[in-house]
Length: 132
Image: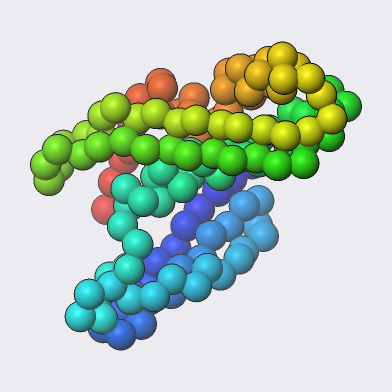
């Protein structure tokens, strides 16, 4: 499955589109300070990606196990120390409610952590290449 993101940013206008396997969706994100860039920074999107990936994967993995999950709460956080420095202390928590025991839900969390694609991408330290 191929993914991409597209930003068209001009003073006072910020357009964002994401694509998964040819299906494009527009996201409404306001312009940043002084009408430039984005009102949301990359760090915020990085942690949103971690939380979103895990949330969606919980529902996917629960379905495979015939568990009905009725509520997912995921909080991802981390730190950046300076311009250009990589993030550190990346952590997340997850809480679930559903039609399974606490032990089964905890096992679902642990198993989903092993297959969450965004998490595994970061854990492997995949290269990012500028094509110019």
